[in-house]
Image (tube, rainbow, N blue to C red; front, top):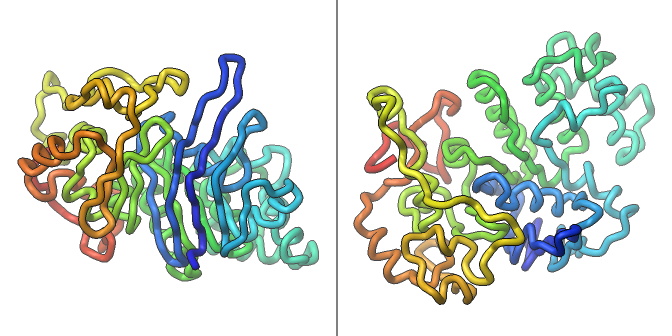
Length: 364
């Protein structure tokens, strides 16, 4: 039995303009110790998926489908039951710690709260464990700074405090939503290394959400590519980066500069772009969400749902014109989508059990 089993998850947002599907037909499983990445442009449904997995979807949202944790169905649970799970079995590192942390409470009290609620620790015991957690995530002089307020820490330190809160009760599933946003490269490397070390140490499952292709390539075993609220491509990270199949995935990877481009490109040289713009949730076509922006679009793509096309080793994508798209993919060199090693990449990083690439083959 998978630790986490998501089947046909859907999140509908009810607004004054009508109802829009922010997440559509999301399906995946996750076992203990596995790492899964979600990538895509802003507004594609990554963070809404994470909120649904935490039982924190907005009040104007309807969540349907199936979401099982160790076989227990979570969709439809009363908020009281969600509170018993949230922070204990499933925890989340939010994207912006300054807004996620309560500015009027000391950080030690915020870390201690889930320990008192879920593990019934006394105030003194929870405080001592909070100090230990702060020290574990690299906050200097933790015994003194446990009584400080969030604004008294740097951005990187606040992110570490968020990690300490998320890991306080040693959850089974950790969701990290853009955990390195707005951090400098040195702090990014430290934060990613810390998350990876703690996930390995405690055997938890990790869902890493990011728009940074290099970060995903270097830190997760499997990945889902999202567009318009749905998954357009999925599979082992190494396979997706080595041979991206969906036109949207290939467009994302082509638009990313590699290190050689950064060093030699003239300022007038422009990176490839995906034509058009991301439609809002009320303007998505009834068929393929990428129809109209895709060079292979035909009339049926706009009106009919695309089928799932299986490739090798669990790699798959959705497309009505898979034969034409795959024929074009065959002309790409193997490894065309592999991101170059970034300065944020930890030494010895692996992609699905293989050494991360230090050079880039083929296009950007």
